[in-house]
Length: 130
Length: 292
Image (spheres, each protein chain N blue to C red):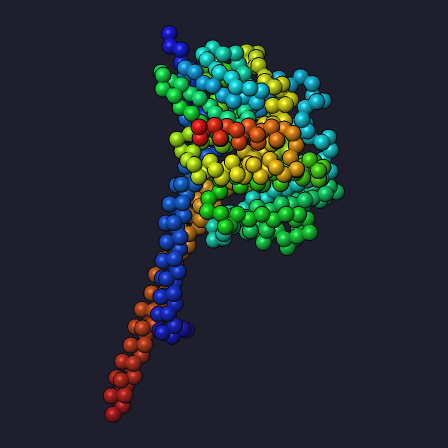
């Protein structure tokens, strides 16, 4: 029996990915989480980080800033308005996002939750460079 | 009776108008296809979002602690109406239809003695509304200078609405836009987005939907509901864009046809009066020759 389940990643503009996967790891708000087949039905939301999809040994990585995840009956659904395939996240775009977030982080108008999210965003983006 | 010269000028002018409307029709048709595609692409997102929210709302047991965005403020004194129209005219009844529906609702709200606040999105709606309801308009938005309406714009509008909500500026928020049914039919719609109307759950029994929530339901809902507002607005944007192009296409098609008919009529008129003047001249010559 195959160990695959259905995966859909949807942004408001388009269907980003619709395929099968055997392992998906997502940056859930309370920590990184890996979903395998027959996982319990689950709803959670995301913080900035990477979605790693592996299908038959092939790996694809997406950067997300936020999103909502639903898993039920072996259908994994990820809704996010900011999904970028790592391949398309070039240096210039990355730099501009980091810069924008850093200035926001340093301003005093944000609350702790936003600070937490922004910190993760910058950290994950810097990770790509390495 | 217009002179021959006048008629000739008139025909040329109608013909050039026809050229313009024909070109606009073609452009609208091309844009329509794209807008329709976008609207279709955007549909899964909003539908899945709705499903998740339904699932969540069903599993919330204590109604008192439910987020205000879904439960409402418990009052209905102040209405916020968001009227979404186009930035350009010449698209048939598109803008007028939305405004007409909006005005009917405004009237009702004011008659019940409730406070009315209006946000207009798109400049054409503002033009039509400000004459009668100008003093109720609290904010006017226009994305005329943006090349493409993306989710970012919808988020901007959503943020403005949410800020007002958290400041207790209104109790109920209505969204006015045109729903795209097909090229000929667009239905103006009023949709209540705050508090979110609970849709009747689908035929699927809720019994086997045991979800694990991480973090708990309330927190997820709090995070999700603001996003849902933006999603609804984005959906309205997409539907509106498709409707606008569809409406323009039919309007311009009609205009082109009318211009064609007008040219035909004018040409007949022109030929008749030309013939009349020739006959007149001939009679004059003949009667002149006879009298000699």
